Length: 72
Figure 1: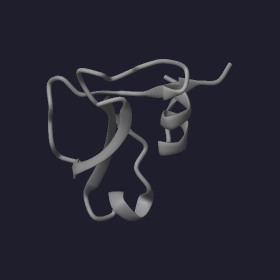
Figure 2 (figure 1 turned 90 degrees about the vertical axis):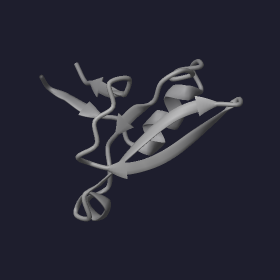
Figure 3 (figure 1 turned 30 degrees about the vertical axis):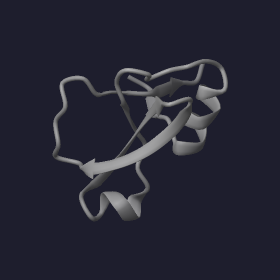
């Protein structure tokens, strides 16, 4: 599709534009050293701040999408 998952820094920059993921969370790009250990990162906004969490990459959550960018 030509999109890239947002990095942690890009996700924090996105949150400066508005309040996103206040009821769900989104997968973000996970550094290689974490992916090599079968981990994955996600982010959300709760209590007026942004949180980064982790889970196994094989995990499935129906309410978790992803945040990505498309460069044109």
